[in-house]
Image (cartoon, rainbow, N blue to C red):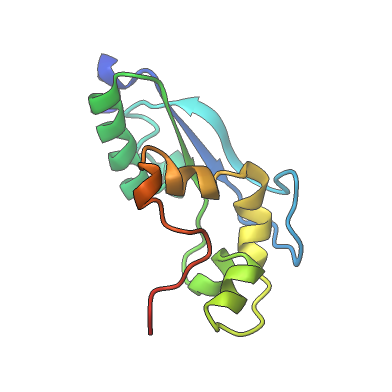
Length: 136
């Protein structure tokens, strides 16, 4: 359970769905839940219906393996197309048209974690180039 002492160092944060932007933002325009320690009352409870179960399970595993504090950020908006979550340059590089990446700009760019999350713990020789698309 989330109340287990093993998860007291896991913190949860949920980005709100109130903002989109045609250009990358430096700060969040909307917040659903600020940083909060994990607990059974929160994880899976009615107050946290917007938090990603997959994100929680991933963070729980990280906490178990690494034995370090873990911060989980849930930034999602159901029913949206993948192109709105990609930077404009990535959409253009992948021949996805002229999508502006308005959800990426408002809900991911303020954290500047995209590159860090993609590359974290990967040897230089196996790191994927940012913005690359799979072959067609």
